[in-house]
Image (cartoon, helix red, strand yellow):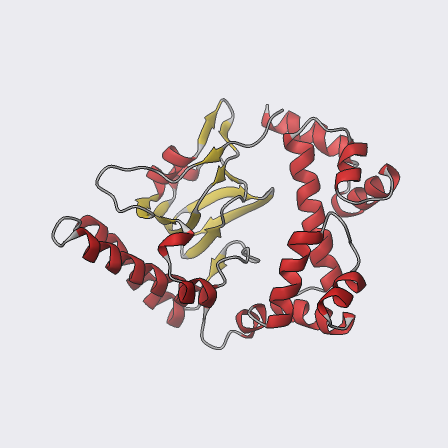
Amino acid sequence: MGSVPEVPFPDTPGSLPGVEVLGLPRLVTRTGRRTDGGYGPVRPAFHLVISVRAGLLPCSVDSTECVAPGGSWLWVRPGQELRFRSGALDAEGAAVLFQANVLGPDAVAAVGLDQRAWRLPVTLPPPADAPVRQTLAMLETEQRRLGSLPLDVHAGIMRHLLAVLLMRLTHLPDDPRARAAGSEAFHRFHQAVENGFTRSHRVADYARCLGYSVRTLSRATRAAVGHGAKRLIDDRVLLEAKRMLLHTALPASRVAERLGFPHATAFTRFFRERTGRTPTAFRLHANRTQD
């Protein structure tokens, strides 16, 4: 049992620094960590926007299993745990790999670059999907034409096309969920949970620190992600618990301590209510599955 290896941004000769477009099979073979049973988990140190054009892409993101069908999009953020499953090489599509520093501050703010994806995968309605795919095709074409223009001009074009792609993905017409996810109350609450979920699991604590009522945070969270504020906190705690159980040798009592539970019994009760297994049983089952 060990930590999940980090995958650095690829240093591909002839490519622009900080942004690259790959075909899906090439992405799987270059990014996936091959094991006897298929692919092991990795943590990309970069953003990864995947477009599945045909077939099915089986994978897991932060221990959440998903099968991305043709026509869908998947956005994996830096530090998230990605694992391709058997059959991933059969999917057709493309992936945009990029580092956050290739985007300007206005684009970073506009697309909510520091917020993790809430829906995996996403299928866009046809009127919104067509311009996104057109922008991706332009990115692919521009990468193939590297050398026909000065390097700084190519880099500028790629950065602008990337910004357009991300803005179209994150700002769909008539999408109240996307607008709600960009609200100040939800954004501040989300950041506060990321910073404090190991210390407090109570919505009231975050509401008091942020200057909102519990009701306001619950409404903002439900509008943005479809469930209440308490579940957002619990989901983040559960994700970190699974990571520790899968990738460290810490006993459940130490995991409980690191996640801010008053005692191991409270952690076991919390974990079993949400997964159907005790922490120890979850670890044993996961290890048998990966062997």
